Length: 100
Image 1 (cartoon, rainbow, N blue to C red):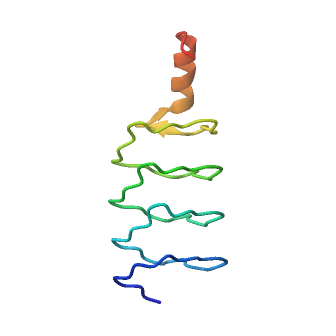
Image 2: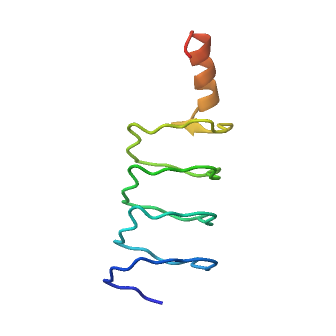
């Protein structure tokens, strides 16, 4: 199915949209629940104000992104790195230095 140059609110349930292509699409204020996005790619996209709750992001790569004001809370960080530095080690060093 092709949707080109349309303005429409979609209500999608129990659908298989794997291998779909979304290009120059406005999906602002959309909600996604129990969605399979493994292997998905997001390029040149605006996700400011994004809320991610109870989501599996293991094995994900974030590259060349604006992460200003991003908050990560209550997440399992084992194996997570920033520029090759283990985040768990960074947090341990911060705490050892008297940080919160």
